[in-house]
Image: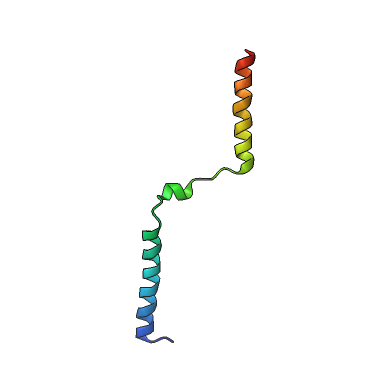
Length: 59
């Protein structure tokens, strides 16, 4: 069982933490949800780009 003073303090503490996180974080939701490519994916994309360039030179 908690006292009303403690309960009020707890609610303010939680709300203050949430507010602080929102204000500190200036990135949009889309930026948070963007998938960062893995190192393997980056290497694969680079390989495909170079392969396409070589194919153009051969033609």
